[in-house]
Image (cartoon, rainbow, N blue to C red):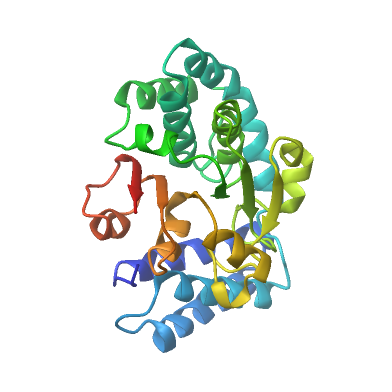
Length: 286
């Protein structure tokens, strides 16, 4: 996916937020925002991949802050919040049509920014929001096709919190005889899952193996990816790409077949997919 002018204010808002997470020094926060503006001025050109631009702006923010993981506390809060909602999600998945429901729950996990936007799983509003998403269902539903392609799955993970709900989909894939190679970020970036959170949650024991993207690039940067991962992508029976950042990256590559599981929270992503905003999407591209 290519950059759109509306990406600029979104990216600046995000770097300001992570600066605020990292420091109370207003001068340093301002320095981060001004550096972000400079990155946009230099690298926001027509045809530029969206994730290349976002990687540059966040790496510059982290460099100025001297902080390799501003979201560290938020990531922990995200997983705790998601775990509180997991029983509700598990009950829903176990009732019937378990694979399709696990796909939906995984996408619902993508719709919440656990711990980042003041999300509080102890409040009734959190369960109400989840129930509303369950009732909404899938707007694009290729889950039956996904179900036939599970022999050798490469699963590109997205955020903390969200990964807790992905575990229910892992269980369903394994029940159907599938093998999962989970791919997480090589280094901290935003609230994305890294090997650290994978081990803390015990997810490494659920799946066949865990690989990393090799760096803290937003999504997946092939130039920075380990050869083992590139080979695995080329030999997958199906790549499952979670979330918008992974879509923004993988839509630039030719790996197929690929299933995009995401909520179209961003108007630019929705437009690129030919969809509307706020849709629950499970789309296969072959």
